[in-house]
Length: 342
Image (cartoon, rainbow, N blue to C red):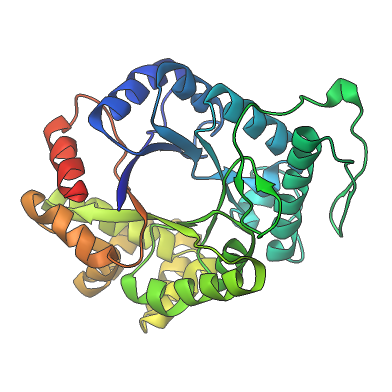
């Protein structure tokens, strides 16, 4: 079970220091998010200032971009990092796609995400193998790639394609909460990025069966499971996680997670409070039982073991929801990395 780090939402000038420290600390990978900053730009600096650590987007918003722009950016980052880059994609939710990015929300989010992944790989196959670009779907029709716009092949050793045929130049991880995207990840992708609003029960009863179903349909190999985990060792950290659980659980599209545990009414009440902007009132609706389902709580010296117990047999890699900053809790991170490896 590899321990990865989350890059905090910071300006690019700070990325080299954080990247070098994360690699020196022994993290397996460094992930960027798309919240306050572009998710791709930091990885040009991560690649330049490190030699071994993996790197990826967790996530880049797919529906805010065309397959071509994503394909080109990931291609350049894979080249810059000598194959260490992982393309992590997510859909975001309808309100953000329409009202923050100004883009249309598809009638079938799973269907459009399928086409985006296939279209991105069509570009990569064209560039790597000099094949003809000819992708035709409901959302995208791509057939123009003259030599002037072709970046040419990457000097990398491809791995087996997750679809069971051809070659996979750059790993693609897909993020999701509900079973439709989990199944698609199992069918088409190298990995699945688990949303922090997760419980072991939801993963075992909903997410993993969907991924395995997708694997049987699309490929005959394992899908990497990368979990982002809420974790707390102090009352202050528990309060922070409680507030984050309340925020995420208020999102209507995440309601199946709460419903599985019998907390659908709580989720509806959280949504109503969020709609009225009553954020302070939401905190109190997350009971200790709800918090314990979604947050690994243990003393610092027992946290690694608690994470292993929660995610053993499920996760291939774990990222704590707490971003990594060098100089802050270095001893905590060193001990956690060591204990997770033992």
